Image 1 (cartoon, one colour):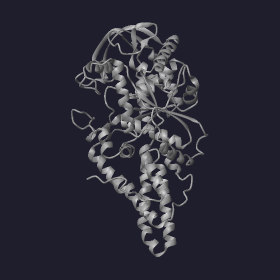
Image 2 (tube, rainbow, N blue to C red):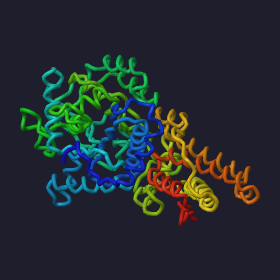
Image 3 (cartoon, helix red, strand yellow):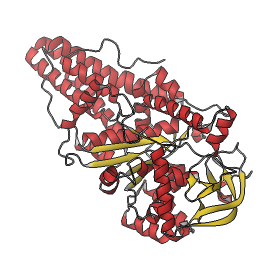
Image 4 (cartoon, one colour):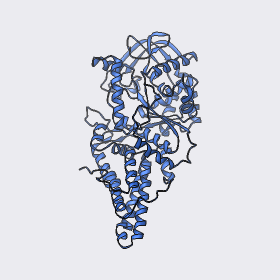
Length: 510
């Protein structure tokens, strides 16, 4: 499957409805200016969890926001399909590795639908022929530039993380902090290494020149301290006899690429690098390549990948945005063992896609860890959606249908700049809070001015008030475009058709 082709069926009605919002801020960016955003690539050995949902939904919100600004957006995601854990699970299921990852990729694309991800998202698979070509060419380039060598070494390796572990990254039992139930693998072999140690000063100079390179700033400071403590060269290959499922090292059939050196290259392989440079030049060189990741991925995205790009003499990323973890109650890490896991599939089935997106946008901290519990979700759903947006929309549209002959004229350019300012800083929670503040203000206006009473005694004045609250509701609906796209489409349609909802937009849950 070509990584540069659309892989979702586009809902034309939805696409047209979203496109109609493009008149909102057409002055923000020159038409066609490029913007590139990518998530990390989840492994295909397990279903997507709430942490994946957070990263994917937030990247999608930014992608949709940039479209509102008139950018030509390239939104990338996909699947990391090499490595030992995928290979081991394939063996357990009695499948060939390629068969296993093919099945996993299909599951991944189906799961994306439950997050409401944009129809024009681009997929890259690390088993794509083009990606394999790209990773191989990247390896050759870095090696030719003198940054790859071979040596024997010993290390402790976490298959769950697909990375080596130092003593500081292990708990008191000597187990990986993120995967305490998995035994570490002891590596003792001759591998290829990347001269990571030569890039400390270069990276610090790069950060100094690009003060907002990693968001939030405290994550950037963590990476600065990590570098100042001294960078160590890291292994970028494994013997094929010990890890056969990977991209073969160029000119050495006995080795396959270490999964990170392979997987990180996806951010440029998806753009056609190196054989088709049109998209690469447009979105990476001349665009604003932005990477979303979880905090456990910061080192790989913000340090290792940037050093690799420098080694290849390719432009660095523009920005790395780092989420905190979603936890259980009291900040406990979500775990099937403790029973505090909330499955995003259950939330979508019981509530809706947009209800999940609403909670992830409004109730989860932009950059810190935040809890996700069913009780917390239900409380937010009832207050913010059922009793909040849903009730307000129903009240206004009931008045409009009853007293107005048609939808009032909707003005253009009605999204306040403050809303965009929040999203420009990746402060999605504040942007969503801003919408709900407007919902509260509109609800208060109705209580204070009582258009439902005024229209019975002064029809002209009453219709003016109703027209005003309809237009205000439409402004709120426009702001919902990147955050709750299905609700955005449905509400705009109801407003334009001057119809009240046939049933509550969000049913209250007891």
